[in-house]
Amino acid sequence: MTSTSPPGTENDGAIRGWLAVAAVALAALVIGFAAGWMLRSDGGGFPITDAPPIGESTDAPAAPEAAPERPAPLADRSETRVVVLNGLGVAGAASALAETAADAGYTDIEVGDTERTTDPSTVYHLGAPRLADRLARDLGLSAIRRRPDDLAPGTGADVVVVVGPG
Picture 1 (cartoon, one colour):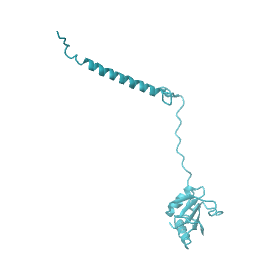
Picture 2 (tube, rainbow, N blue to C red; picture 1 turned 90 degrees about the vertical axis):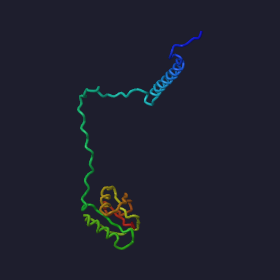
Picture 3 (spheres, rainbow, N blue to C red; picture 1 turned 135 degrees about the horizontal axis):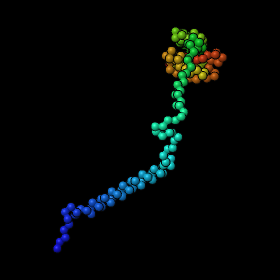
Picture 4 (cartoon, one colour; picture 1 turned 180 degrees about the horizontal axis):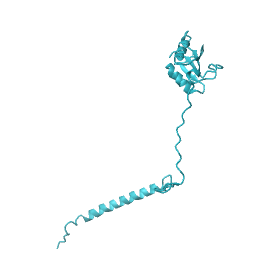
C-alpha cells in the first residue's frame, strides 16, 4: 500500500518554512522599529504643544507680521566728506580720482598724499560701510576696508580713498 497525498499538498512543508522565515523577519522589523523609536534622543514621544485642536481658534488674535527693517537712507553725496590720498607717488593720481567723485555729486572732497600703499585702490570707512560701498561703486572700485586709526586722522572724513596701482 502506498500512501499518496492529496493533490497540491506535497509542497506544504516548504511553504510553511518560508512562512515561518517571513514571520520572523517581519517580527524583527517591527521590534527593531519600536526599539529605534524608543531610543531616539527625544525620548520617542510625540511633541506636545499648546496649540488648540484642529478647527478651534485661540482667543488671542494673531500678531501682525513685523515689516522688515529698512536701513536708514544714506546721506546725500554732497554731505559725505571724502578724502582722496595719493599712495602711488605719481603726481595727479589723487586729483584725477577726486574729479571722478565730484562728477558723481560729491562736493566735500580733500586731496592729499600718503605713505600708505594699497593694491588695488581702496575705499576706507570708519563705521559707515554703506557710504564706502556707494563711493566705491561711483568710482568703479571694489576694495572696501575699515579705516585704520592712523589713516587721515583729524580730517573728519566719512570715507577715505587711497589711490593704488590697481
